[in-house]
Length: 244
Ligand SMILES: NC(=O)c1ccc[n+]([C@@H]2O[C@H](COP(=O)([O-])OP(=O)(O)OC[C@H]3O[C@@H](n4cnc5c(N)ncnc54)[C@H](OP(=O)(O)O)[C@@H]3O)[C@@H](O)[C@H]2O)c1
Image 1 (cartoon, protein in one colour):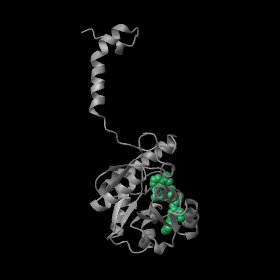
Image 2 (cartoon, rainbow, N blue to C red):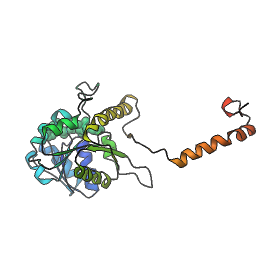
Image 3 (spheres, protein in one colour):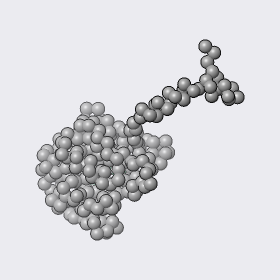
Image 4 (spheres, rainbow, N blue to C red):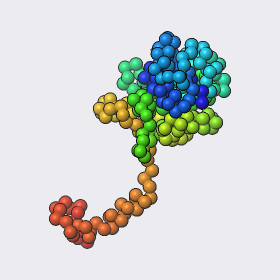
């Protein structure tokens, strides 16, 4: 796929690396195109830098990797976006980073969709730290990092899903674009875990099925509990057989 990236910072450069490693053709731009050139030359032959106004014409999908306040201007400066799929990745934080600047009745992704009429906006990747995005996919059967995506246009969502999967992530359909109102607070929670709770930026939130076999195993274990307790010397009341 031909993928355009606006922004050559943490996320933009991580996208450039991982997308080109997955075999995509990457074009990247930045306010100062020289910064985009540095990223492109570090990534290799699958990536090239272009001036802002030439980005959209060279890309099927455009990833907006700038801070939220700059998204609309950056997208408008990238050329005609009618019919294009835009991946909106921001966590729209207040300037002092104490919380979200938009929410409850709207989201960054919806604001961008309202401003860039005719484009098909999909929210994705806002719960993935740049460190995770820029790392190689897990190997040896390890669980893939999940990427939640939300949008209103089915075809655009299919495109973004296949892009996510091609990069070695697990794509999780998070519903319509208005669900960006939930994804953006989840992104903030991820930032809390990473920085405030000091878990580090090599983490990502995930939704996991609690499968029936696992639940069955727990039920079996509970049924065997009295017999196991008779053999144990534990004084833990949880381990004693019921008196009744
Ligand atoms: N960092 C993360 O782990 C992470 C995770 C999930 C989501 N996000 C979201 O991803 C987005 C980018 O974050 P980041 O950490 O990559 O930020 P960053 O390192 O500050 O990079 C932002 C880039 O956007 C460029 N830019 C700003 N305005 C522009 C414009 N009008 N036209 C073209 N380029 C412009 C900046 O260029 P200059 O250098 O000229 O300012 C900079 O290269 C944010 O919305 C953030 O909320 C970040």
